[in-house]
Amino acid sequence: MSALIYEASAPVFKQMLGGLADVLAKAEAHAATRAIEPAALLQARLFPDMFALTRQVQIACDFAAGVCARLAGVEVPSYEASEQSFAELQARIAKTLDFIGGVSPGQFAEAAGREIVLRPGTPKERRFTGQHYLLHYGLPQFFFHVTTAYDILRHNGVEVGKKDYMGAY
Image (cartoon, helix red, strand yellow):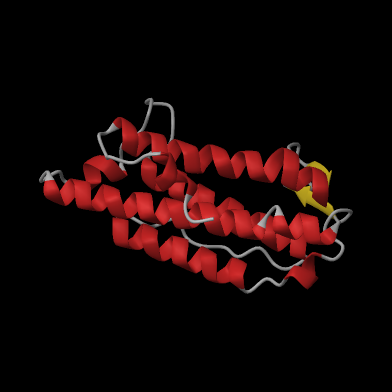
């Protein structure tokens, strides 16, 4: 089971974050070609009560790193959410990919049954087994934010498609 938990997490996060990096590169090129201020895309959102593109990317990275860390039984990295440019978002994705690349499949040996506790000691405390956490919380959250980032850019005219979203697999 540990090999399956690893395969369903780290490589999937790497693939999708690679696709997200490519989509962001296309968005930056789109802005330059059309003389659009990058902030117009970086601060774009699908609806006023939703997070902007920048925050969607930050949260996707946080979920990828956090899920891998919790499943591997290592400390969850903490990154300040201060990115305000395409280059800074690319650096955030690269830092996240480096972290995920540093977590070995062997560290997932007990991941399926490992207890994962989110927001401990608060009214919002949630407890999961590792398998349930990955399949029913971590992956859906991650995909939501990656998809929303993609959708924001597509909605704003960036010419991206399913192949861009999927990344290399």
